[in-house]
Image (tube, rainbow, N blue to C red):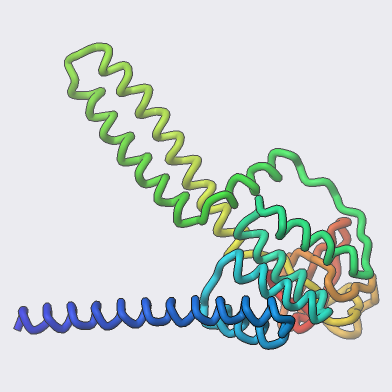
Length: 256
């Protein structure tokens, strides 16, 4: 009976692995086909293929960047900004992504004065985005294991110099483990739990309360980036880059 369960488990794992590989190959083929269509000027057809891949769960900076480019060519600026922002979160050091995102931003109506972000917060966010969240987590685990090994050297070695070296290296790797864990958590917050959103309707009034009878506070236009602060029913409380707050219908926004 145990052997039967074992064989069934192995076969299930083989079929699952084969299915994943097949899906990846299909996704890669569609991505390549989309690139060929885009190069030949068939932007709508390329976009349809890339969005199909994206909706299937594939995520990469290259895919989001290409989708943004296709939307830009089709003059859908809000969607272009949305996917450029998604690409930037996955690859913040990419000059092409940053350049195209800035170009798209010049085409929107709203020009909001931004409150400067504290420099150490900005650098902390940028460093956390250098590697994926899972990679930072692996570094944290590996650093912690090395820390434990070095502590064993400190406790059990009879050589004084080894004990001292083991202790201080253990402290160093313990700090590295903690920093990597913090960067992993920050990356996850920025990429997977983003509270940033793009206005997706031509124009929308920001309200003083989460209902249509609220007082109009400001008007936003498509492509403007906001931060979601709270949610009540079908309404989001958003904060603008200049610090102002108001309520917008949820269906007017797309979360980055």
